[in-house]
Amino acid sequence: MAEDKSMQPVSGDEVETDGIYENEWGREETLKRGDEFPFDPAMGQTEWELTSLVPESQEQEMYKDTKGNTKSRLHIDRGDK
Image 1 (spheres, rainbow, N blue to C red):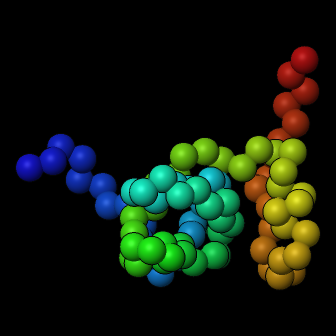
Image 2: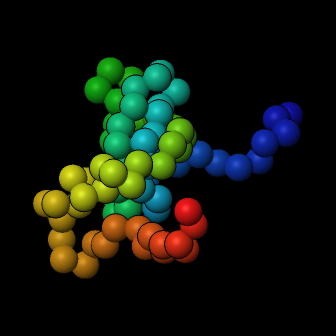
């Protein structure tokens, strides 16, 4: 039995966290909160794993054509220098 009991999201599930996701066959997709995990064109339904968060510098581009009720992540400037 596998030690990891967590379940990865699958095609058709709703994305909860903005980020770059990879499926079991290595296909990467940039998805944002509220999107639906896509089906793989060749393999059909697949599991997706979050591989990295979207860089802050790319968030504006990611959210330029979205609904008014979808907001990007909150960034707090702590004044660290």
